[in-house]
Image 1 (cartoon, rainbow, N blue to C red):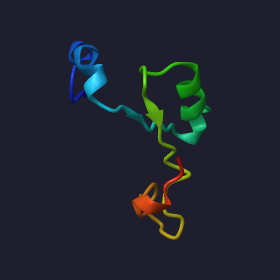
Image 2: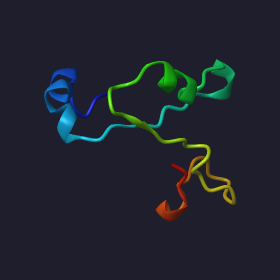
Image 3: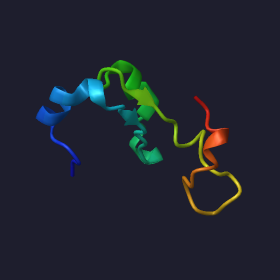
Image 4: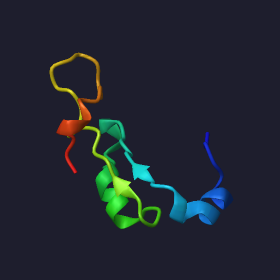
Amino acid sequence: MSLVDCGWLEDNINQVKIIDCSWHMPHTQRNGFDEYTKEHIPNAIFFDLDKNSKLNTNLPHMLTDSRSWEK
């Protein structure tokens, strides 16, 4: 499911900020950051879910306070 289609994004790429937070289940042996570095939407930034998730909870990938996010 897409929030916008590729044509809209291409027409508006300079007016939006793309945040790539790709993450894959461990058994797939894929790495979202490695895939991002090989190919991504122009000007997109990568947001690492594992590095920016709360560690003291049993709920996976709960975000911390934004002031502690790694860039």
